[in-house]
Length: 228
Image (cartoon, rainbow, N blue to C red; front, side, top):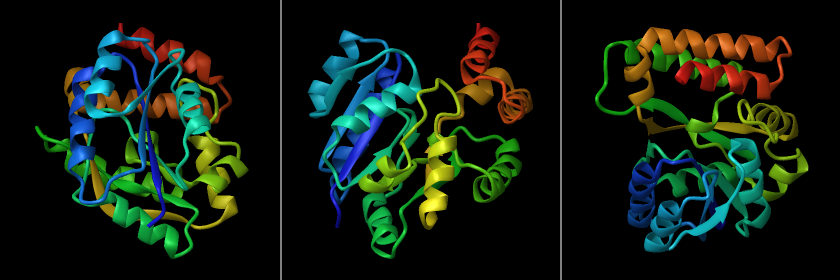
């Protein structure tokens, strides 16, 4: 099995981060290292990382830059990028290793909403699967890649939103980008807070504006203004 470096961007989400780090400790196969890149430079985040044996790095609050910073110091043969609020399947490292050993340059996991689920999840999950297969899977789907392939295509873009888009497109040009059957369960709290359809439509509007050329920094301003 190749050695895996897990890279987790975090911004004031220490409770979810602690849960994820606890899951990683309990996996049957363990990553070579876990790197948390903290966009809030928070002492609480530092303490959580120390508790679970993860490397802590301070960064400016931009997810693309956080991911690039983590990848730059990672030592593993493969890189696995996780959001702090996901729940893992039983043996994700073996699934990724098998995909890489069969010739994939990288891949991603199937998107599933975690509990508490609501009926819109039954419609949104297949739609996200189609978007991921024919468009771009996003960072909450546990994108992974061989280390040399990641750097060959330039890694993540240094953007606060849509930072994975040029990475995924580059990996697909380079070789096979494998969708895995195993799911990652994503916390539905933001959909519950904003409304399932309202948040979905807002996300689609951002994606359309990005596709039309609006700068990611401007899109991030709209995203955070709406949250406020």
